[in-house]
Image (cartoon, one colour):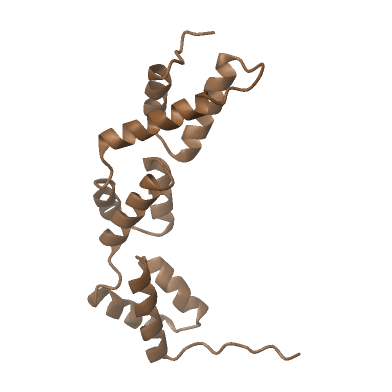
Length: 165
């Protein structure tokens, strides 16, 4: 059997495909650059297409950061550290990251952290000491991207105190 090899799109086809792709969901410049690289466009063509997408507002770094922060926090319940790390991987500027973090209401952030803490504490395993439970909950929340000082406060408020043994 013969395998069909896909031809990379022409410049105009790529422009149309990228506009549709960016209109479907917020994209950042690095995602578009990667797609153009995969399609084997020259650096000049990549820059030209990206400039066109930016000027026509198909790509907007701040809008992307706001949508990314909002989605990852509200749907996946990620903390600021994990969100920041992922945005930096996508080469989003610090200014846009800070602007995106304005999407998170501090009270909602704290409430979410408490809810995650209490849910994880409710999963206490048989023969697990309070220190093992505390360490497990801390690891979980830290992996979710929450700040250590907030994790400590949440554990304290949820009934796991530093002094308990």
